[in-house]
Image (cartoon, rainbow, N blue to C red; front, side, top):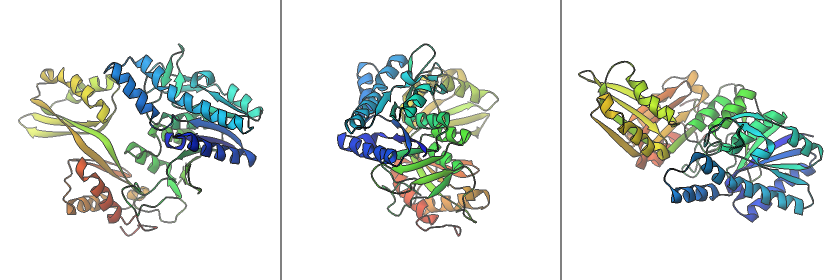
Length: 411
């Protein structure tokens, strides 16, 4: 007997037929003798509907009430799934984050988990029942509902799996696992049987929608066994390793990913002197805005340009913050661009193989794709390009690194 924490995403729960399909999978695991705890997202499109509803009232919803509203989507999904399982004769009990006492910091929209009281979950398991948990939400010390950001149900699942010492945390969605590229863009993309934790976190941070970055970080911190599976097709999915891959020679590049949700902001003509970067990034950070890529370049005469990227939904807010300090900085102007995307090449093999960046730049150059700026890590190279070139860029990089083949050591 094993204990599985299964998380089902919005597309897996899109309608009643999909919910019945999810129930089939849960029942199959239960009938095989396993203990099952289930974490659910809201039904597909529901969170977006609730966000639009909030913004129809005001462009700047009160954070506390915003979390109260958008947390309801998961509650609907958990109740319907529990009803379906009970209808089939299987004991199931649904729980909100506050009922389970998923204690978080006192922060809305991007709260972090401090502690999970597992008493109620363990009691449910001991009663041979199936616990259905609303993902994406918790409660602070004052009893306020908090949420974890988009994709936060993944974090809920991993945190519960760690707290219960589960044998495996299984993340179900509409894809069969982690692929070498988005199959909707690259027909030849392959599913990976295994991927390292380090590669997965780089893919997640670079735009891959398969897993929330925070969930991957949490699984790595506590070594939670993690597997990505399809709700609609049978198969082994992709297992996330915490050690090197079992291959004697690991592929140089494991995957190509992208992020359309990027906007670029450039502050032109700031003084090229110490502490200017802090004067820009300090107010941005204080506003709880995550910054992705940053570059500062000297343009002569003691001046520099400072460029960074943020999520598209944070673009307007970022501009308002900078408008208030641009004159104080002595800058000439602020230039923004929402028509950009980020392309990334990820692979553990980069540690021992040189020339990855040159292959990447050449492949994009041959397609006439201009690189606006570059960021690197030990196992990743990312570039910003015009949004219109995104799909061509992904396809050309997938081909350049031979990812349609089983291995690409020769790239």
